[in-house]
Length: 183
Image 1 (cartoon, rainbow, N blue to C red):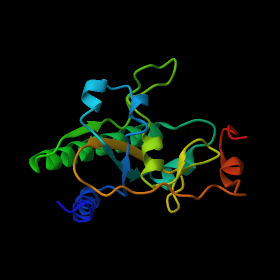
Image 2 (image 1 turned 90 degrees about the horizontal axis):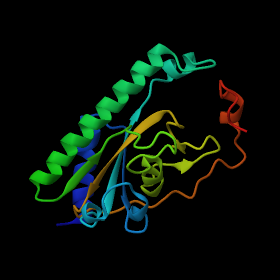
Image 3 (image 1 turned 30 degrees about the vertical axis):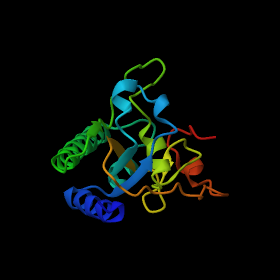
Image 4 (image 1 turned 180 degrees about the horizontal axis):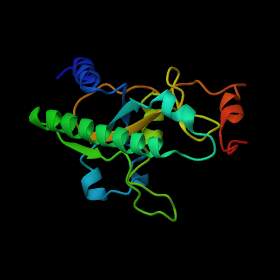
């Protein structure tokens, strides 16, 4: 199976289903950090990262705290990502490969803010952006106005390279943060 062709075919499927971002990361060096059983993780060597754009208008409405409209939008975007991850996982499995969809937003340990894995770390490794001053994944086109989900797989796919970009001298997020949380 040609890794490039598989990658391009899967990317098209994901974008056609509603994803705005798609990237593939090699996870061999980081999967020991995941909160998933090592027995299960041993079967996977790649992670597909999917992103969905958030509404700029809803985000602009936030002044000092998230609004009710934002909370609904957040849940809806996460539900969309979870549906995308499930559909893509089923597609991969029909092709004869393993797939494990990781939900967009499930906290396993609230005190330590731990999830199954870090979607933003996967997104960074998959070339979707870099970790910015706001401690979020920043994408060249979308900024940090998106949500992510991940699918672990053993499907032969080419992997993307992390971007070398950084925020540089840009401090736009510091200036516009409604809570003044970014220093």
